[in-house]
Image 1 (tube, rainbow, N blue to C red):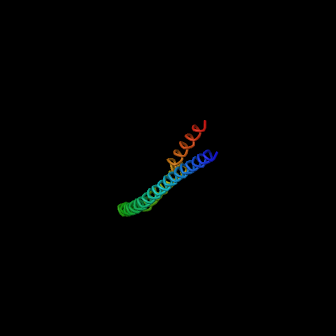
Image 2 (spheres, rainbow, N blue to C red; image 1 turned 90 degrees about the horizontal axis):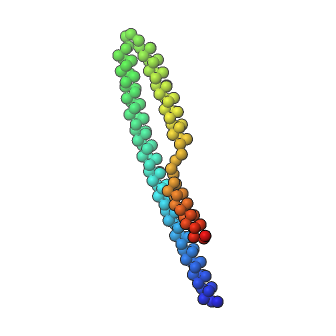
Image 3 (cartoon, rainbow, N blue to C red; image 1 turned 180 degrees about the vertical axis):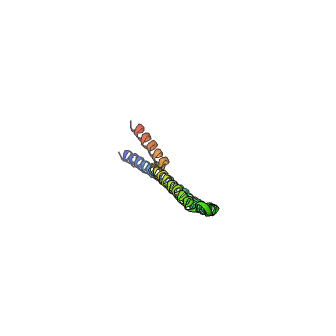
Length: 127
């Protein structure tokens, strides 16, 4: 009888060791995914801000050029037309941004897939 309880205790220890190892691996994977996503978002933010700055300066200079080009004849018409164009582009960009925000993120997809594999493996092992 003592041998059976020793073997049962050893099995429980191995099971706990395996479960701890699985949880540890999954947490490390999750931490890596969070770090990658943070770096990706930071890079995107920096690039987006630089792009906005460059386009903003370019649009400002182009608008000034066009207004000066038509200064004598149709400066108000040019300013009105350019304002309408920029407003329309702003509305289109806002709609595009809203659709991108509603799209599903792939954050934690690898971790969830691995957890599903673990669950499937444990379920088939019990059967």
